[in-house]
Structure formats: C-alpha cells, structure tokens
Amino acid sequence: MKKINYIALIIFVFLNSSIALAQSDMIGYGLNKTLPQANNLNPAMLPDYKFSFGLPGISGVHSSTGQNFTNLDLLTSVDENGNINTSDIFNKMRRNNRVTSDNTVSILHLGIRGLTSYTAFSINTKAFARVSLPKELFAFALYGNASDKLDDGLLDFSRGSIKTMAYTEIGISHGREILAGKMTVGARVKYLIGHAYADVKSLDANLRTYGNDEFRGDSIKMNVNQFDVRTAGVAGDLINGNEDVRGSALSNGGFGLDLGATYEYSKKIKFFASLNDLGFIKWNEQYTNKQTVPSFQYKFSGADVVELINGEDLSVVNDFDSVISDLEIKETKNESFSTSLTGKLYAGASYQLTRRQTASAILYSEFYRGALIPAFTAMYNFQGGTFFNFAFSATMMNGRVNNLGTGFTLNLIPFQLVLATNDLLSIVNPMKGRAVDIRFGINHTFGNLNKGKSRAKKNSNNTIDTIDLGID
Image 1 (spheres, rainbow, N blue to C red):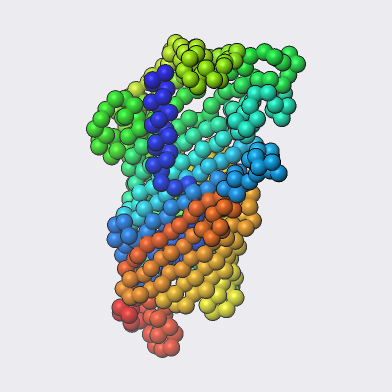
Image 2: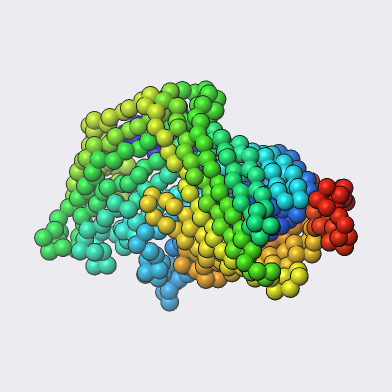
C-alpha cells in the first residue's frame, strides 16, 4: 500500500508542477513577423529583425491550461432548490474528458537575419501533462452506487490515463528563401535533455454496482486488470529511493526535429505549414522504475458511514488495505527505454487584405497516443512595421467556437515587449472559461530588414552586395 501511495504521490506532484495546462500557440503563429520565438513554431518563418536576443527568464514564457468538459459557472450552478445541478454537469461531460498541460520557458534565444535567410539558436525548457478521465468516474462520484443513471450498473474506467514529461531542448534552426523568394523552407535540429517522466498508459478497471437485476442488492465489485506505472529521470530516481536527484535530471538524452515551409501563391495569398517535435528521449537505465500492478478484485459489502467517520469501525479500510498489501507488485529497475515527443502539425493560409492587414486560417493537430486532437483558428493581423504588431483570433477547440485570443509586440528600441493570450475569455470572464493561456516576455531587437529592402527597390543599381543593412 505504501508503494502504491508513493507512486501516486509522485505522479500527482509532478503533474501539478508542470506549471500549466494547454492548447495550441495560435497567437504566436500570428505574430511571426515580429516575434522571434515564433520561429520555434515554424523554422521557415523569418522575423523582420536583423538581430534578436532573448535573456534567460524574461525573453519568453508561455503558460497554458485547458480542459474540454466544464467551467466554474457550471460547477457552481444550482437548481431551484439551491442544490448543485449535478445533472447538467454530468450531461455536458464527454465520454473521454481531457486535461492538457503545456509550459515553455525560453532560457536563451539568439537570431540573425540575412536578406534571404534566418539562423537562430535557442534553449527552451518544457513541461507537459496529458490526463484522460472517463465519464463513468464522474458518474460514480455524482450519483453514488444506487442510481438508475448508471449504465446498467457497470462503470468502465479503461479510458483513464496519465502522461507527464519535463525536458530541455537545445536547438539550432535555419530558414531560407528559395524559388526567387516565393518559398521559404526551414528546419530545426534539437538536442534533448530529459528531466522527469511518469506514465500510466491505461487503467484497465471497472466497477460493478447497483443497476442490474442480477446484481440488485448485491455488493459493489471492483475489477482491476494488470497495469503499469512507469517513471524515469527525477521521478524514477525518487521512487528508487535516491535523495540526490541532480544526476537523474541531466543524464537522459535524445534528439528532435522541426520542419517548416511557406509558399507565396500570389502577392496576396500565402500557404504555410510546420511539423514540430518529431523526436524521442532515451531515459538512462540508472534512473528508471516500472511498477507492474497485477490484476485483483475487491468486494465491498457496505459500511456504517457514521462509524467510519468516527473511526469506530475501520474494517472496510483494513480489508482494502489488506488486499492491496497482498499484491505481488513486480518492480523493474535499471531498464532503459525511449519515449516520443508529442508531435504537432500547423497548416494554413493567409490573405493580404491591405499593406498592413492580413487574414489567416490555421489548422492545428496534436498527435497523442495514436489520436489526433484538432483545433481551427481564424485570425486577423495588423502590422505597423516592426514597431507594433497586433493579432486577434477565434479558435474552435475542445468543442468550443468562442475561444478568442489576442496579442501584440511593441518595439521600444532596443527592447521589445510581448504580451499575448490564446484564450481571452478565461481572462475577461473566468467563470465561463475552460482554459488559461498567457505568453509574455521582453526581447532585445535591432534593425528592420524591410527598410533595407525598400532602399534597394528605390535604387535599381543596388545589388545584394551593395544594399545597406546597417543597424537602424
């Protein structure tokens, strides 16, 4: 019992230390012409600054939380009798309820722009979590075991899963114009340092309770099939009983790849796409742990709640503890394994409304456990040179079509202020929101490449060797 509690505690703490929960970074994509970190989303998007530099801790933080099944307004709503409206809460839940978490802290960013190319070096620390909660789990909590709302008395928890990971990526990217400037292509190669990992791929369990004539009046029966709890890095090191985890946080290596492209179909229409986080981390065998919990059953025949609360009759607790304690949990240590990153796809098109205004449509998909989690965004962008860039978006994600985002970059020479959110509703009206998303930072930016290009156009005698690219 102590071992299982310890594993659960590690997963819970690690999950909640992942800083935020998540969605796609659409606004970052929309501000790509002036936001240096947007190159991390698509290495083929070349910022207009000739030189950009981001200091550790202040240059870029993107923190996001999201779930697809409820909000504070629904959770606090009451019926005509003043009771929490559990029926509305349950009816609006999904068969598979997801909580997602993504957080990125930019440690260092250095970008250099040429007339037709852009090269960047970046170091980012990332943490993410994915949790799947089956609807039946909430059914049992809301209605208890004696409700006809349960599906024939059988609650299936097999869709439950947890995956969390934290790592640092050290990357170098290069993007270049080709086809006489009509197309840009780019790639980023990343070395990955894994810090911590925890995973319960699937909790194959069910609960048979009141509802079926065959079982009516009988006990509650729990059936749990064999499942694995796998940890590595800091999480694995702690479970293995080590207190000094400095080595386990830096001894896991891997590689990643980002690919991107843009294509100018006409002066007004442009297409773009990027495929991010193709890669893996191999976890050092010295800091891994795998707990294989065998199948077991438990029968609950009832208890006096008052006596249980007062501690007068703990036989139910003792019986369950005895069942768990008797389990022969298989522990495997020092077995190296690899985990893949969560791949992401961005694809879209933009239309130039005026010289300073652009409308875009962006499709986002995330690859997780063999499934695609999609989002679609319509975006408006106003760009006043490199001095000011503004974007506003509407995203359909997690079943909503009113997920509004906005953001801007403001160049105060030599400092650039960045502030953005992919979910404005949750900030303006937290009671209705299902996510919290914020990006902020301060970059050092110098030079406007477009001024150099403008001077070249005015003088037809200029060549690529004579164009003035001095600091503005």
